[in-house]
Image (cartoon, rainbow over all chains, first blue to last red; front, top):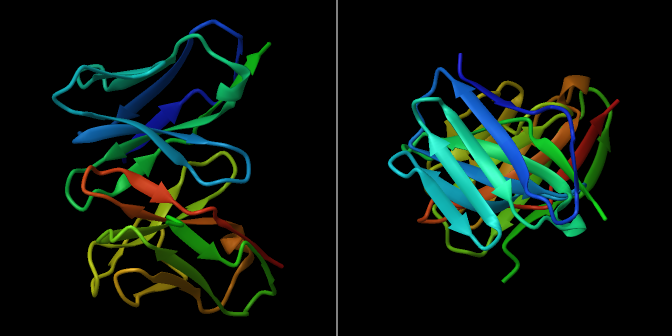
Length: 112
Length: 111
């Protein structure tokens, strides 16, 4: 069956450092991969999308890589700030009806 | 432009009661989705609607029904609530760039 794995343990980093979150998947060939941010008690908010033919995408302090051979995506936040503290969700898209399969998320805590 | 709205925000039901969760979007999107989110698990797709007048089952449809009332509205109905349906429910809509926009969620407890 399809499976998506994100680090279940919280990631604690110091302000100013780069946070790197991992998303691994098996038994799936996604057309694209997305990253969302979710704050407590709120709905997910879209951050970045990367398609299967793209290796890397950037948006301001965010960078995502997509390796379809390793079946892995890395999500980087450079110059992290306490305001970046949240849960980050990885989601794979099927390119058809665009159904998404979500990972359980990784909680990031950025400390001053 | 309110985006995706959901009502109610919170609900407590007794086992066997029924209720409908309402969702509306004002972004003129064709596709809409209902997810549930449980602790330690990712969002799981319950039902989706690729366009007005069509609905299809997702990963966990049992115990739920949906109605795509028009292009704006997509409702989720629990006919006979069970404790296993205690969860946070999110509605979403999708734009032409494949971005999904989520509502604020409905926190449902079934006793």
